[in-house]
Length: 335
Image 1 (cartoon, rainbow, N blue to C red):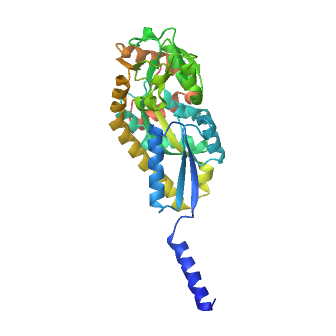
Image 2 (image 1 turned 45 degrees about the vertical axis):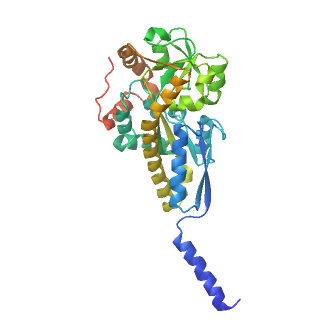
Image 3 (image 1 turned 90 degrees about the horizontal axis):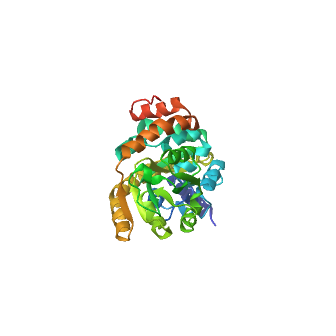
C-alpha cells in the first residue's frame, strides 16, 4: 500500500475516533419484575435513550424477572461492580444503606404529588448522597403506585380485618413493624418466591400496585381481594454501580445520567396513564377492590407506633427530619 493510501486510512481512523464520544460497549441491566411492569417501562426507556443518543454504539441488554438473580443479589453485584445496572424495590436496597429505609415509613407520603417532590430536587439529592456512600448511583426512581394490600381470604375494609392474616413482606424492619401495628402477621419472603408462597398458601396476602399486581398475575395466585391502603408508596430505583461509573468517560457518565432522567419522566407518565386501566382489568377478571372505612386509624397507628419503633433502623429522628425538611414538610416530633 502506498504512503498516500496509508495516510488516508490513518486519517479516516482518527476522524472516526474523534467524531465518536463512545466506544462500542454492552451494559447489562437486571430487572426484578416482568417486562410489562413499571420496572420494564423504566428499563426500556433507559435503553431507548442510551442507544439512540449513542447512535447504537452503546448497547443496553435487559434481563427481566430475576434472570440475573433476585433483586437483593442483583443489588449486591451492582455494589461490587460485577453488574453495572439493576432495578428493584427500595426495601431490597435498604440493607446496604439503612437511611434509604426512610422511604418505607408508613404514611410518609399522602399523594403521588408528594412522592414526586420526594424523588426530585433537594430530597433526591439527599437520597443520592446516602446511595453513593453505599456504592450505588440512583439514575431513576421508578413510580409503582401505593402498595395496596391483597389477600385470599376476605375483604379488608377496617384495620380489624387484618387480624389472623399472614402477609408476605420484604426483609424490612419498617414494613414488618407496620404490619404488626395494623394487626396482621408479616412473613419475610424473597420477591422471587412470592408467587409460589401465595399460590401454596404459605401466606395469605401481599402488597403491590395495580400494574405490578397484574404483571405478576397475582390474581392467579389466590389473590381475590385488594384494599386501597395508602400506607406506603412503592419506589423502585434504577441504580448504577458507582465503581463502574467512575471508570467511564465523562461522555458516558453524562449519557447514563440523562438516560435515567428520561426514564423517570417516562415511567411517571406511564403510571398516571395505566394504573386505572390495570385496576379495571383486574376487576373484570374477578378481583374485588375495596376502600378503607377507617384509614385515619391506620395512619395514627403508623405515626404513633411504627415511626418511634423503627426510627433507629432508618438513621434516627435527625435523618427522618432531614428528609422531611428537604421535602418541605414539617419535622416529626415523637409523642
